[in-house]
Image 1 (tube, rainbow, N blue to C red):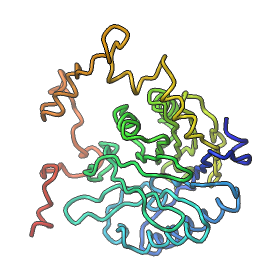
Image 2 (cartoon, rainbow, N blue to C red; image 1 turned 90 degrees about the vertical axis):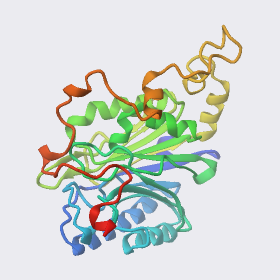
Image 3 (cartoon, rainbow, N blue to C red; image 1 turned 180 degrees about the horizontal axis):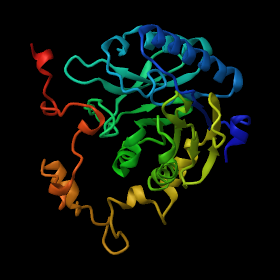
Image 4 (cartoon, rainbow, N blue to C red; image 1 turned 135 degrees about the vertical axis):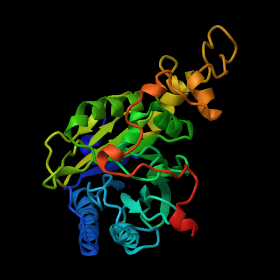
Length: 338
């Protein structure tokens, strides 16, 4: 069910629009300002496109493109002009928005951050990408966990970014913290198309959670992003999918958090998000609630190590032109310390 893409909005529905934004090339501060205005204009297009829309979502790299440039002059901050413009656009058009910024980090490499801003211009969710797409991306690994916020029409929303969605633990954490809708923004290019599709579906089905996913679209003359706006219902079925590859198209659907809540409470077979922590409840009261997974206990103890750890060949970004890091996670850079 998607209400004809949101045209027929139900009383309990949340209409969401995924913007397959044209991939930009950003080099200078003027480029950044122009792209900020492009995104602001697209917020207006989203509102004009569908008066029922509650939330418009822009892809990862919507503001900065795929160059991986860490020039401080084109990095952003939460109190900078780019975020201020996004807030103003949400207020003007009375719509929630999800936006991507590369965030200045005086203590190290920039963060790849995402924001959800409500229709009153307030930041309701702020997230730093947990799993940069190594070895290609230089971003600092996120250090604030995975937040969940109250969204439009009583929904609960989480945001993850691109490569995050390849780790089933990320989607599980979103659901475990109460998210009914998980947004996944990305800049992926065509080689990832198949894995993008099945992870979007598995992240939904395994957690009885809708997923709303979108990539950048089109070419910047070097990279070809794939668009692939995809909205998946809690049973894993795709209810909207942008397969045309048309840049700046907005893929829409209505999601029903009330039906997600109903499934989470009422499903017996395949209620996996519950059953994971209540193994075999038919045989033993309440099910087994231990942690039998070695990778979890090792990770918690700071001892995560694969059997083939010593054979892994790519362990830094030198193959993509980045210097080998010497700073440990949580330590500030030498420059910042001075």
